[in-house]
Length: 492
Image 1 (tube, rainbow, N blue to C red):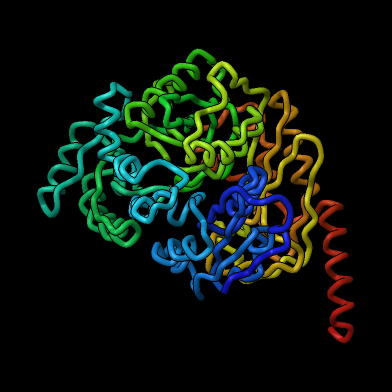
Image 2 (image 1 turned 45 degrees about the vertical axis):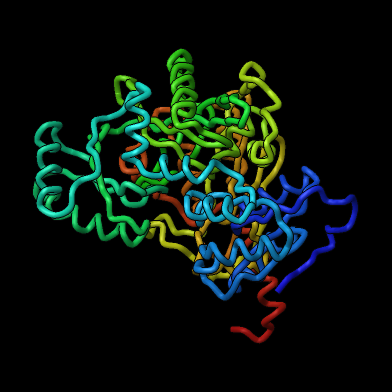
């Protein structure tokens, strides 16, 4: 099924680019594509037939009933690109974004993959190979192992590593990502028990049961660096982000720049990120991630070979459109600016507003209808979302509804803007993470910038809140009740 939308009218389109994704990131990509004068082709599964990304694209093509399996079907994505005449594919994040077989399929089909080459994705997607590349380049890393051997030999290797470096250690899937396939091991018994389970989980998630070990950096700060690299030998960075506030190795709040006050240290980390990118022959946009210990020693973690969810905070402080650059770089253009042109200003914070109940272990709220959607706004505020009033949240996809990003010229200004936006943001129907973030935005350690990856576990009081006692919340519930009564006049 092919849908052509009204926005095909107007100036002739330069090229067609297929967006192999959904939700807010699909909308983000489509906007950049259209601003460049290209045509945007959307794809979707049946559960997404009411999604906004279909309606703003120039064309939309149904992949199948899904759920998820068609978004992950390389053959169907390639076929959709050929059917619509798309010469390039942007994978966004998630789904196929870091799948080297997808990048290779695009290369074999003479379709431009908007991202690094399949070889780069293969090398950096394998965490052990990536460590070897970084070790050869002299990039600082935490102690770790190669891939553990199968069976008893691998168990013995793991126990020997634990004996040499001490516990805790981190057991990781070699091809893992997005916080998946990671287990913290506290002793020999857990090591013996967890390795077989970790292998099974890795095989199910990544079709590869390889695992390895790293020494744990206790309560680190998580700092990452956005990089851009063209095919003409130019590689630069767009500064740092702090992603320390996490839950189970998945990021909740992202900040730019890092809250570390030692600018000399941050400059050194950025220089190391560029060095790491060059060592891996990196091309297009990517993120080099580091962990910092309590003594501010920093260690290479990984390179993410895609646009990050949190790219918005970097765009807000630099004014540089990362997705636009991704597209131009993929088409062979050189970077249009130098490192000296990158001048970050102020601070930015992004929160992920999900349809989840933080009080119930962040249980997803899929299947519920958004009865009220009243967005926030104002100076220095950016929203990246796809929901609307009346939208029924699919149960089969990620629970992200909208990303709220705020910018200010001081940390206090930025936090105040975030707090005001959360107080004035009303989403009714599903429970959301809004009141949870409101608590964080008023918490003293957050206000002082004093947090690391242990923040969520060491601040249980941020889960103590009323669902919504604000005047805006009361008004939103009243509006929802009025609509309900109009549609159901005989309801009890």
